[in-house]
Amino acid sequence: VQGEGLVEIQNALRDRGVAGNFCPLGNLHLTLAFIGEKYDLQAVRKAVSEVCFQPFILRLSALGTFPTQKGVIWCGVEDVDSVSSLASELRKRLKANGVTYKSGDFFPHISLVQSPSRIVTDVAIPETTMQVERISVMMSDRVDGELRYWEV
Image 1 (cartoon, rainbow, N blue to C red):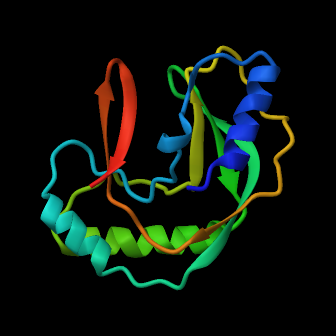
Image 2 (tube, rainbow, N blue to C red; image 1 turned 120 degrees about the vertical axis):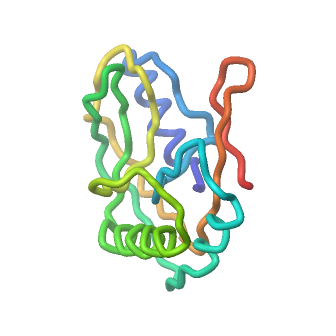
């Protein structure tokens, strides 16, 4: 994800007194399917390689929250149909390749702050577009107490 606009939103949240676990620029992402800790990486890569889609433009939309125990402030996207179609196709390919993933409704979003000290969702969203051209298989792990993501 090209994250300059997202970092601008995070800075606006900080300016409004929000503290918490802000997702670093290199970790910002939009999850299409959450696979978990037990998986066959070769099968996941095969499923991803089988997904065909036309590149599209993604635009940021309003902020929202998930009412988890600790809370999350996220940024939504305007192009919900394009992203939802992509996620649906990926999930079909994962299933066909025997890869289990967290099922349930798909809601396209980019997490910005986990465990926020306060909920603020009325900040200005900069005009930000991103070209979606490929899907990445990402892995996460804690490094020195901080969650880090990288492409595998």
